[in-house]
Length: 63
Image 1: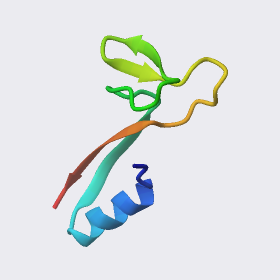
Image 2 (image 1 turned 180 degrees about the horizontal axis):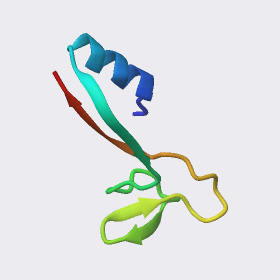
Image 3 (image 1 turned 120 degrees about the vertical axis):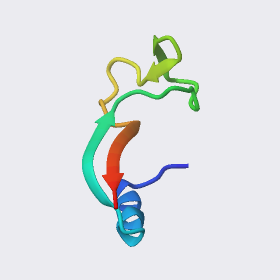
Image 4 (image 1 turned 90 degrees about the vertical axis):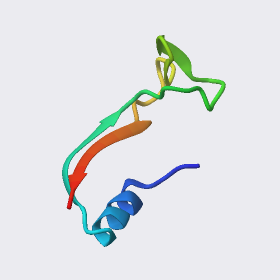
């Protein structure tokens, strides 16, 4: 299931949280799609030649 980052930010705002940091990464720690290639131990990415798009994100938030 894909989640739009705007949906995440709206939910955090409704919960009264302020986001201090947001970073996107072109890696996943699992392989939900068969065309992903290994990028390290338990890390997967899109194959070379595919556009580099964010697959995961990390954020820091507080009340």
